[in-house]
Image (cartoon, rainbow, N blue to C red):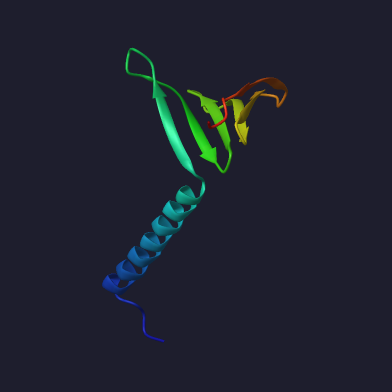
Length: 94
């Protein structure tokens, strides 16, 4: 069996890298929208990631700080440990 030249190996490695990056970007797109929040000093203070009807909030350290789930016109809020902390109901359409 002939050995591959360094150019052939580089081509194979480059193809593998491209496929890996494409699969990572597809997974990120499926994860839903993500919003980063910044403090008055311009530093990141956390993120919020939305998937379906649930938004999960994370602090600057990446730890989950809570979530909110919307059903109809009511949004229910949960703490980091999953306990319900409150809800808000938007007025209906007139």
